Amino acid sequence: MILDAEFPEDRLDDVLKALHFDPVDPKLDSLPQTTVLLDSGDINEIHAKLDKHDWLRGRYIMLPNITPSGHKTLLRTSFQVKYRDMVAVGGYLDGSITNLDKPRHVGEKRILEGGDSAWGSKRLALFQTSDARKADFSTLGEHSTWVKWAVPTAEALRQACLAQESRLAQTEPSLPNVWISRLAVSNSKFMGRVDVALNPQYSALIGGRGTGKSTILDYLRWALCDQPAKSTEDDEVADPRVRQRRLIDATLKPQEAHVEVHCVINGITHAVRRYAADGTVLLKVGDGDFEKVRESVIQSLLPIQAYSQKQLSSVAIRVDELLRFVTAPIQRDLEEIDRKRQEVAGRLRENYGTLERHRTLTTEIERSAVRVRSLAEQAQALRDGLSGLSEEDRKVLAGKAGHDRVREFYVTWEQHLAATQAELTGQGHSVEATESVVGAWPGLLGGWSRGDEADGDGGGPG
Image (cartoon, rainbow, N blue to C red):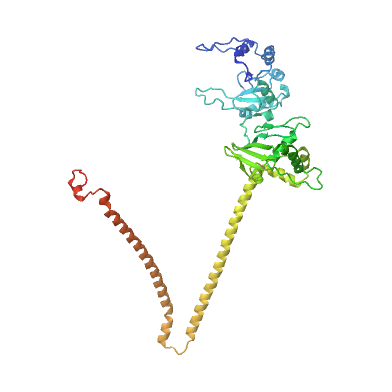
């Protein structure tokens, strides 16, 4: 049995008395033995008994035990009539709801889902529970059920049970990382000041014709710089931007008003303020100050999808609007993919340039190698074609290749010796610097001398 969160505590004992149970003095050292309540065999009778009290009627809800094979569970043999006729719309499970997926509990799961006509085809909302069966309370709250409600009352629980698909969750629900928390209009011609708080899940503005629902939506779209697709000549729907501009000029400009939208992005509050006089857009991040930004910054940071009733009818028949409808929720992902694509394209161009340079150098090397072989063959042919040379002259010409190799070896050794000399010069400068530091030690140590160290008397400076 669950009572309203604001149920008066001084009437809790009266609830026990209404159940024909004497309250227990909380000052007792030990609690009395637990007993079964009188006339507690039928849930409907208990409801009728409690509803006799005006102060209790509608302020409680009863959730019977529906644990398969549980202690005094409602899912017992011959309990079909009680289950079918009971007024309860939900029940609690002792443990995790995943236990119903076990093969031996297929029948109980079908009953709870309303698939068994013998049990009245009655579907119940299920609440997971986890009693504190350990002294350290480590398992308390291990299995939980999340309920979406506006106020913590028994009636809210009953309504959640009746709409369990959208109001109950057996796993922790994930809230959006980006959501609009507040819309404030400083002043307007017909509505005056507007300040609306929104929640991170679903918000609806409900009202009759002419109450300002569409106006608030247009204010929101204008403040967040929403840019709907342009209308075509064949489009029967008027250009929404024209209507939006007329609305701002007629209702906000004469009042010198501004619209402020508060959004939460990953836990950080962002405030966008737009002035009707000149369309200036200011952005505030966290506890910072308002700074002037471009419309494109707002569109990238806080992309929205907003459509009037007439626009929705044209979304499916206009390719540009349909594309916007599909891509808007994943715009950040698309921008990230486009950024990576540009990076890959840049790397490909860089790699292609490197490949082209490699090809050019390879071609030049091949040409140089062919040229060298050609010149070598030409030189050999010229040497062989010379006439009137003595045998000694031919030996000198034949030894030219050896002289060339010796010259190359000599040049290489000269370069090596120059590098070695430079390294030795650097080490010499390092040794000189070390000597200068060592020479300065006696002055730095306050005049200590070797004789002072040899005395061993621990005396002071000499």
